[in-house]
Image 1: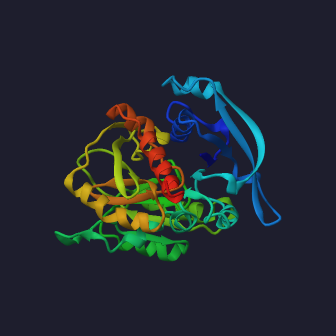
Image 2 (image 1 turned 60 degrees about the vertical axis):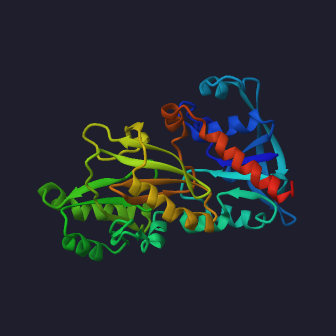
Length: 337
């Protein structure tokens, strides 16, 4: 098979934890042709989408040391029609460029995308969980899986929401952030937070000279520190871990200084995944990272969900094998084999 990875620049790969690198390694091990594709290196020529692909080869595929594997990789540029790929993984950091998605629209009949173009359009932001807002535990409909969430860029309205929140604590975050960037905890009972609300809203709404939407979300108190990252493959849990914040930080993301510990999903978390899984598959979202806290769904990560390295280490597993198995089975099914 020809497998492409629409991804961040190769020089930005961090081998110790990089999930994309593990998917590339597994693909090469199986003898597939693998290319790295940068979003700014695509073109349409005579109605055909082309890309200046970087064909990846390595002479060190047997080693389980991903730093050694990364160092051994060679990249050679080749201008390739995108429809020569059998599978394309979207592994770029959010938000995805709408022009890029428009380019890919012409290819969905020829290429299997992980995740689908229509699915990425639906879920390429933090509003997607709102489409799941009516999902709840069958045992108790009052126990909804989505925390109270407000999305707006109207400062006056946001201040009103903050004042009317029943609880003192809530999370404020940018619409298009990732890796914990820009996520802050506000506490109305704190005079410091109360005095800073105006300036914080101004900063987030006007950041980058734009009129940005921002998110206010109910803060979930839990006995266990941190959140749960669940990797979903084809609508089913593939692996999970708990991300614990660094000292004096509420953010659990590894990029924000958090660390990971093993986690076995509890019955409520399993039920949540089982409830949401079919919706993800219907939307063409086959490889997804769910972030859970207090038995609620905080975020759905569809662009480049990570965590393979940490879960593999704790479970002595190789999640990337299951993902490439899935992609191979889809192509075999399409080809009638």
